[in-house]
Image (tube, rainbow, N blue to C red; front, side, top):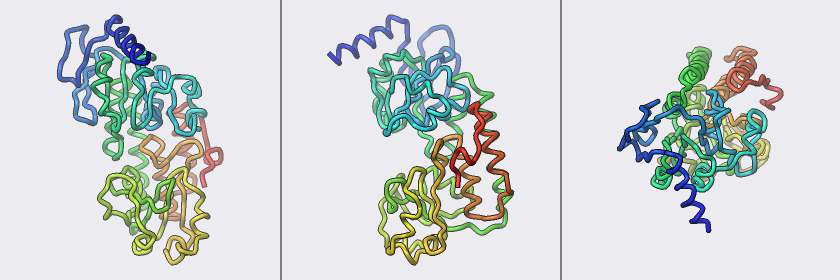
Length: 340
């Protein structure tokens, strides 16, 4: 029965006049080209008309889409593991009622077909499903924003694909102004050694190839785990953390309270633990350490932790208010976001 539903959905796409598109390698004759973009797999993707129904299947992708004005054309729901994310509840609650079309690792083809999209954003880890996705006859962009460069290119890619170039440029300008400001505030300061762990395990260490490593550098930090070869969180021993001897420990958004770590005897002797310099990225609404627009605020927050007194008083508060008002249409402040 499930296979029949899939087949019926694909046939409905064909009847509706969708054209088969295969990784940009074939361009069918039609009404012309609205946009042509290159995704993170290097695929040339042709979009024949301005999208009106976009699938952004998980938080990292939908957050940026919302920031550049795609709220009214997102047709997929939030696929958070623990239900609807606080960010969605706060800034786009209607997405909680839309079909969940996948996650960071895979897409639900039946759900995709059911929402009748005209642009699909595909998480990099789900790229092996491209043949089935392309069979729907809908342009699909593979996105992998795990570096600062890729995050910026995703903003521009989506801006071009969705006809939101001005909005994308405005977001990038805001982000780059913060990068420039912070660099000026901490100019001349020695980099502070930082160890960062995942939300689930204090011994899951940050890879230097991850987005968060670039946030740390931008905030005036030096990642002590730059010897890790993997591209994701990597298990290390407590003995190794002692050898790293970080001045500051930063925990990923959503991790347990830092006090849980500082109370453990086996962690004593590590400079960051002995001095109480253990911090957790804010996450009550938005995860400031993720490859999303709000990470620019995470850079300010972290720079203030690493270099106390160097970030002007009130600077973070001002940027927080401006950011959420400008890009999500709702003013927030540090207190309402539980930023410590």
